[in-house]
Length: 319
Image 1: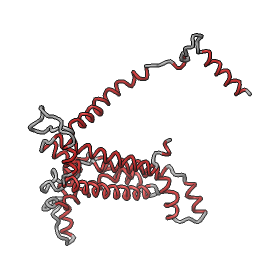
Image 2: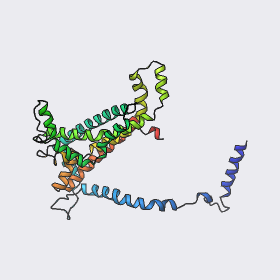
Image 3: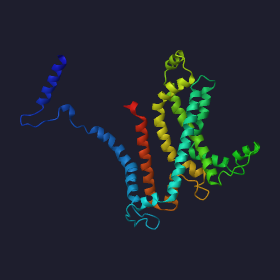
Image 4: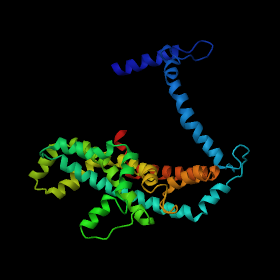
């Protein structure tokens, strides 16, 4: 009864806000307050300048013939850049190599990262020291690591071939063949990427209550059953967003491919999509073609991320 009385009073108060001439006025507490919008305005202006404007400009340029000859007097040419990209055999070849590059990297990042996180979650000696050592690849600037790995893969003086020679194995021409350079880039990026997954997985493991494992042991569960029915399901909400981010970062990883292969050597064969776009746009100055290329990459990543998060229901726990 008290609740009903309060609702009636509220209704009467709302009706009293209606004047006798039939016009409805907002209650005093719901008046428009511009202060929050004024606080957010500088951030919105900066976001529009550094994100929205370049994106819209890139869309406009992708429909133009902008290149080194028509840098200022460019004109619209419709969808011809998009058609040129999609009918270029290099696009499909580099798309295949990009998918192979991304899938291989993410697989090893997640596998090695989760494996090491499970080890570090146990009560082992010098656990903190191992954590610091394993995070080091992530802490070192990426371009320094990439250049170091390029030196390690030098066919004559590199440490990798020196080790192979000591083991009695044949030296590998890492950076002078297409798949040798691709493998060198893969190894360097796997070494760089697993610490991120390890840190994320370790945080997820430490949030799982020990009582669940103790109850499973009482029920007779072995390590595989605990991994399958406790660890993996409870790690999923943490790992799925990390895998999505890792996939996008790896798909767009320009630094490692460009620096380890020295700009796509040999003969522009060691490229993924983003490094080829850079080469086409800023070395060959086919600006309109490169802009259309980058928009196709953007659409592919947008569709993948949307479907992946939707199918895995990764953000369900957020709401």
